Image (tube, rainbow, N blue to C red; front, side, top):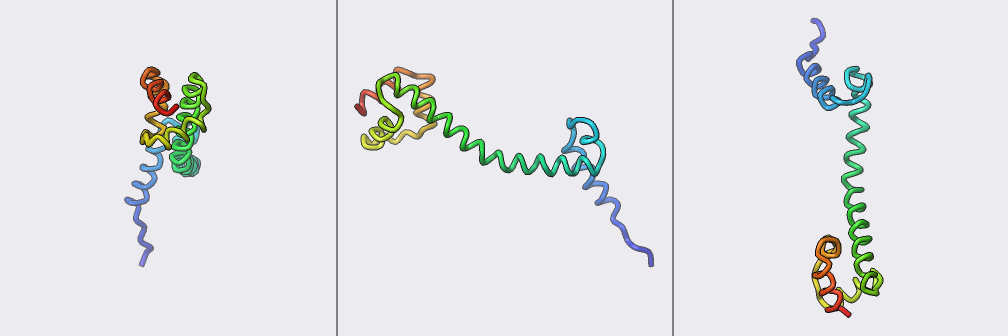
Length: 114
């Protein structure tokens, strides 16, 4: 009896990978063996960088809070310590937004914790 090969599934699998590789440069977009490796690598980067993005945003928020606090004569660590002691439950994302886009509201927080 001849060997059974599931060509339909094989073709679908390849089409799916080539569709994911759409927009890549050169052979990476249309040659199966090259596209498969490129898509695998891209998926690894995407998985890794979903975690990295969270770190990057937290550091950005810290920089913005630090800049806002230093305009009022405090360092970031002093400011955050006093915010926690005062019982203000605003996270870094909100504090950074206030420091960046609403300086008067941020100044009110600084005056409250001083």
